[in-house]
Length: 152
Ligand code: CMX
Ligand code: CO
Image 1: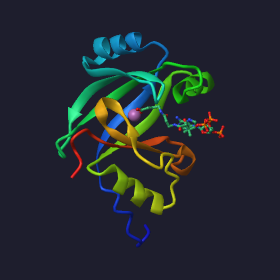
Image 2: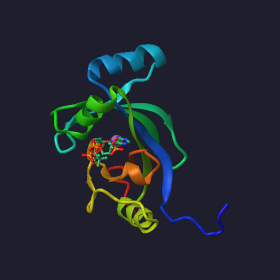
Image 3: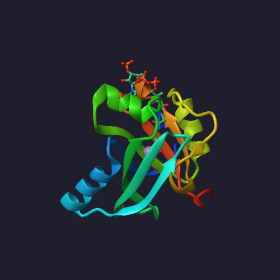
């Protein structure tokens, strides 16, 4: 173990696991009938090129929750469409929650990980999100998310 302290990234929960699917309604039906998870929120995010549903799994001790984020592409040049072409359906990214996404991104960036968004973008339900390059995260596309109304 290294003695060097880690970055003060301020991450407080696993916010969601993003899952790429070809048919959002079929995927929702699978998670409902198999596990009993219910959709808490559904939307189209044109900037990200997705139609998506958030299925709540559990609450977290920072006052937030952990979700599955089911993602169906809305256009062929979107990140999720490219992922499906290459890999088929499956886990696309993980997302950590924070109370301050800009500060967290700064800390993670200072640790040597490429932050893909210079400014936070709009994520699910008005949240603020940035993505980290999967090649700097052991092959895992990673998102940092600050829920709407959560900023300090
Ligand atoms: N997980 C792990 N690796 C991934 C990946 C993913 N989801 N997507 C792409 N990669 C890898 C590819 O396998 C490829 O690796 P190799 O060079 O070894 O073959 C490399 O990254 C480049 O892949 P690409 O298909 O050419 O894709 P791009 O470089 O054009 O884009 C990325 C990759 C991560 C920069 C882009 O997908 C991105 O900006 N993603 C963030 C936005 C996003 O995913 N939005 C949808 C979700 C929205 C939400 O959660 O709200
Ligand atoms: Co996400």
